Length: 556
Image (cartoon, rainbow, N blue to C red):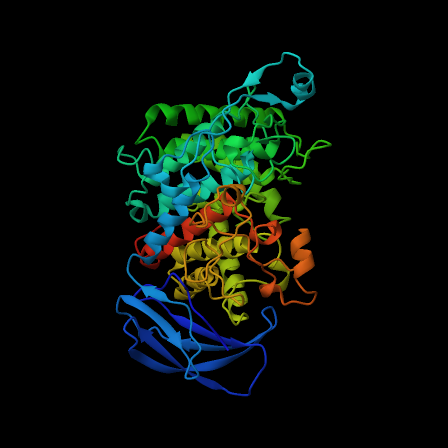
């Protein structure tokens, strides 16, 4: 029998459910479970009640409510037969500390700068990727020795386990973080030991500003925004300072330009109190991008050119990006033309989409909702209904899982942990709108899942938990020669249809979806990292840290 707990821990007054699981049934309706303190003393003995069979996990599951344990300290759960859970902690600052580790991980993704020992410790490294980039149309000429225009593009975050930087991914990650700050500013008071710490700006905004200043460089003279900045092929598993491949500015896309317009408008509001010059420039850049979109109403997608194997972040519809941009620019300027554009785009999209509250790089319509919920018109009410309807669907999914995972079988694909975290954000939003306790509890269960209450027993955040993922698909982690793993990265999680050779070889066909995970660096479809998997985790931690959203509100 296995015993699963949230390996980071629980809030003193929060819901605490210990999961017992085994693959074969023994017919027992109840099982005994003890909670032991750090001195080995039993402080609670209770029954775990049979929940049923979870087909996605391939487990028979029992639940034990141990919410009565509320005294701060370190604990573990134990069966009468001696099976033990991982250690867990009860603490008021649990999610504040977890969120800080997740945020600091983004610092370790910084490109174009050295990571100094005073901030990075043992993970210090040299400056990387300082060369200038070439536009794709000039790449062959440059490689043949010709003279072409070059662009200064230094900065930003490495997107994932590779060294590329992608506009739509960056915008989504920034949105999660900047909106988290707008919703829950009290959750971001602590310093992260960044180079900028102590400059009078909250460190979450210091870290985001590093990415925003790079993103600003992706806009071209006509207002369009390049889709990505990568080399033609992924780098080998070398340290970033050893990667000398030529970086390329790939052509603009409507998705990149819309996302850029939206997140720059958002940034102009967030940073107005801290850096008025940057805020004004960001708004001007957002309006310039919007004007380009207006002059290019046609869909302009993106596909990799022949010979390129870096991520393409393709999409088939740019109306959600335009919607988000219109909503943000309306908040910035009050210009009714932006609101009219948002209303037109919402009407067109909502007639076709299953939901309008998605908040990932592929569908950003939910970000527009966060912008518009504070309004009093029909569009705001439509979004209120959309968030609560989706939250009801998610709660229903949560109730059908022995582990409380708000997932359908089909959801266990590449980056399944992103699905879990994005749904937790929807639940958090619905809770702020309704104060419905079910949404709060279900959101907490999604973070429990990420931190160890799942059929693998792994905490899917590196460095957090006794049994945490330790071998992510990340070039720096594999090339730095350091046994310790950089903490705070969310890994992709179970993928029932693995897309990399190692996982295809090692995962036995018929393995239950929730168990289709391996903590191996070669398994990029299971264990890669990326900035937009960390960012929703930061949002959810901020929500849970904010006493379950009791202080939070829709304050855009």
